Image 1: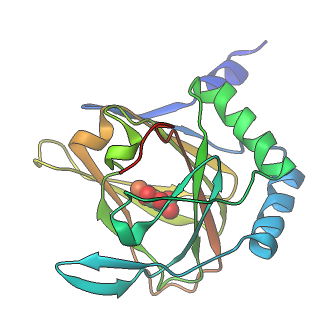
Image 2 (image 1 turned 135 degrees about the horizontal axis):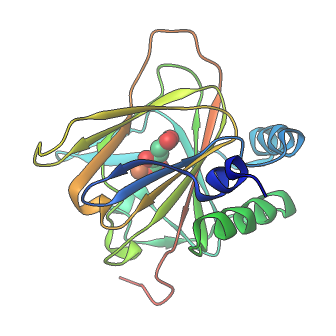
Length: 208
Ligand SMILES: O=C(O)CCC(=O)C(=O)O
Ligand SMILES: [Fe+2]
């Protein structure tokens, strides 16, 4: 085995400060990634969820849906469990590949569809109680490249921007969510559709 292969299996360390961010380009064989993008665009039950912000209802500027064992409702502040779509064979194969690469297990996926450059997600942390105390989240991207932004909550480190191309994997290791926030900004550049799949472990006993 040569060193390059070993390095790509380990991933590229992009951040290791109050949590870690690791990156793997070209995760799946390219035909498999292309087929998964097509399948998800066609078969997912995409919805535009409402979310409460500062006491007002807003439409999220992206479409979402859940796959796997559990979903949660954004409208309830991620407290209420919902029925997700089951993993398709393609998604199950991806989940197993990501589990092997990252060394973590996942039971649920929040899928995001960014239809064009106007779709986005504002700065937030994936720190909902249902994810437990030390959430580690694997984020796999398909389609158009968008820039993933990271900022330290207390400004104790430089901001980071990472372009996430088709078929790339980003791992956010605990305690990153406690100390950092992340976002996908809007862009005026003409960009095509992008799907991002965030693999998470939702606490099975959680219910409130
Ligand atoms: O689209 C992305 O890369 C990030 C999505 C995200 O932060 C989330 O679903 O919590
Ligand atoms: Fe997130």
